[in-house]
Amino acid sequence: MHAGMLALLGPIGLPELVIILFILVLVFGAKRLSGLGRGMGQAIRGFKDEMQTDDDAEPAPKAKAEAD
Image (cartoon, rainbow, N blue to C red; front, side, top):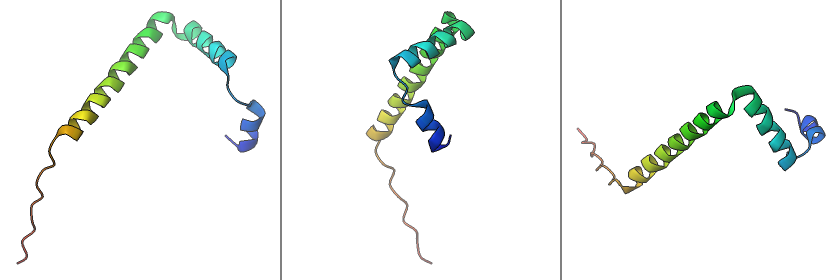
């Protein structure tokens, strides 16, 4: 979007977010949205777990290049 268009729209506040959520519930249904939220939560949790296990792992020793 252009900067002029963003200035025209203004900041998104709580009333706008409630309206957007209401429209999403009407379009997709509450059951599908809850499943989508659950899936997103599991994906984020899995990503965080993987990031923590990467930090805990010891770095692999670097192989020295032999000069011939």
